[in-house]
Length: 133
Image 1 (cartoon, one colour):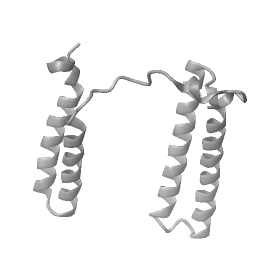
Image 2 (cartoon, one colour):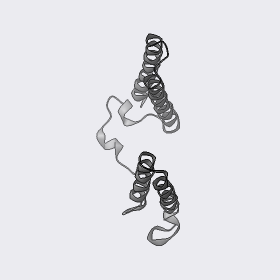
Image 3 (cartoon, one colour):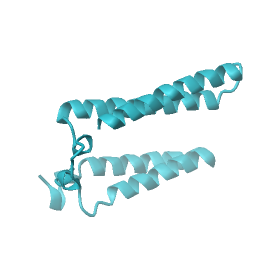
C-alpha cells in the first residue's frame, strides 16, 4: 500500500502544478478546465490520505512484501447483502434526478423522492427480513 500512497501523492502534486501552470497560461479566464484539474488533484490526494490512514490502521499488506504471495489476500473483505435490489433502485433514482436536470424539474423531484425511499431501504436492509441481525 505504501507504493499506492506514493503514486497518488505524486499524481496529486503533479496535477496541482499542471492546473497552476494552465491557469497562468490562459490568464485564469477559462473556468472549466482549471477547477476540473484542481478537483482531480484533490481527489487523488484524498485517495492517498485514505490509503495512508488504512496502512496505519492495518499495517503492511502482502503487496508491500517482496516475497508476498497472492494467497495472503484470502479472507473476508466485508459483509454484503446477497440479492439486494436497493442499489439498483437508487441508481435508477439518481438517473431520474439527472434526467430531470436536463429535461424538466418535476422529473428531478420524482427522482429525489424515489431516491430517498431506496436509500432508506438500503440503510435498513439488515433490520428486517431474511438478513436481520
